[in-house]
Image (cartoon, rainbow, N blue to C red; front, side, top):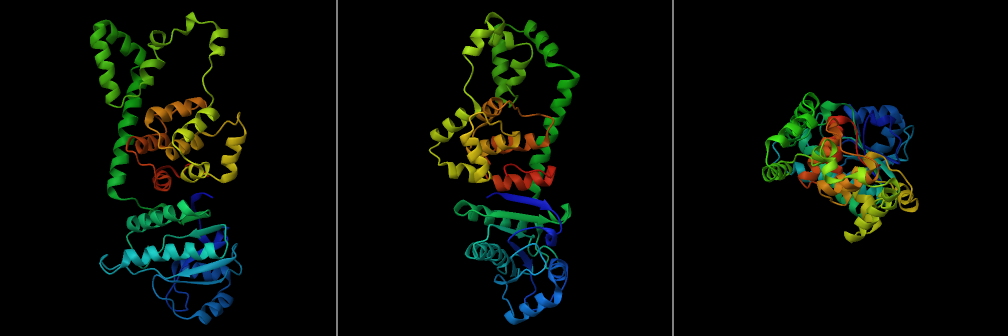
Length: 355
């Protein structure tokens, strides 16, 4: 089952388990803790919580969910941030790991987390997010469960400065390039350039542009197509007789070449097993664009292979889409962790891949 990020009040989320950022003592204090008590039924929940007693930091306790849309509440006590040198990271990792393990023991199919300890406990949000993502990634590698990360607003959702800087630069550069393309059509620019260059110099320039990450489609989609693929000299019957490999066949060819099990693929792509089964069984299935991009990440395809797989499903990367640009950057940088990628996508676009 996949990983999701939603912007919502956690008390309104439907899941088998709701995780509460609890106080060590059996009291309802503030923030998420207080909201959960109020929504569940304060008196009933507090009475059960009191019977458990004190919970050590990094540990968990389970109660009923009462009026929440859940079966259980897992109460976990996160660390208070001091300086990162007092086991804060280890304690926070324990909160996520133990909550996930307990949900597994309870045979739950879904669990909803807030960003633990990022409120009054003061844990830096970018560090807390990275710990959560790492814990989810490790767990989902071996287990099946829907994990929902619930954020109340974008202020509670922060990436590291390095990640933000790199992505902002990449998006800005590609947006500038797209505006330049629209103002100065490639056909007119390239036709003039072709006339000015000798054939050898022209080929050298094309190779240099490809190395500089200029999409090769720019050179084939406008003006140069007839030089590379003279379709006007081929009959329609001949073209249809030599139609390319379908998306379905190409996908499973890539899976076979990568020596992956289907289970590995749907997990890495953040897809539901039923969804992947539909892709596998229906040779004419037309996937959504974000599904294909998720599969490109799962198979760790390079940019050329990714473009090819998208094209076989009648899609293409758009230089005007932030989602597409962020996915392309992940592929170029060989960053194939789908959960980390989805966290970045959600920060910039409120969208994620897979599911």
